[in-house]
Amino acid sequence: MRKIRIVTMSLAIMLAVGAAMATNSKAPCSSLPQYFKSGNNFYPAGIEGYDYVCEWDHFGTCTYYFDAATGTYKPCKAGKILWLR
Image 1 (cartoon, rainbow, N blue to C red):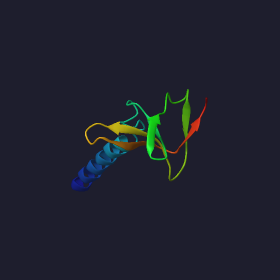
Image 2 (image 1 turned 60 degrees about the vertical axis):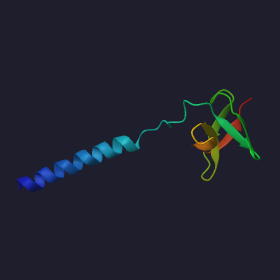
Image 3 (image 1 turned 90 degrees about the horizontal axis):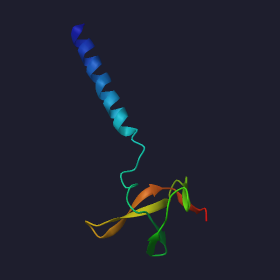
Image 4 (image 1 turned 90 degrees about the vertical axis):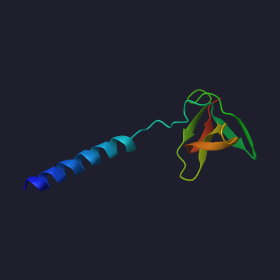
């Protein structure tokens, strides 16, 4: 009986840690300058909430960031960009 209790408690702890890590809502790239794609070119997007907002879109990419290590633009936020100004 004690072994079952130890296994159950271990599983509950692992589940709690996994859930806490999975609910991190802030994208790690959100502190970097954001760009939007127009054709094959990338342009500065501005300030989110002031110049644009990202609306939900299942298959789209709202903004990109520049990865200096690879020299390429990588997707940051999902959705589609809507201009406020």
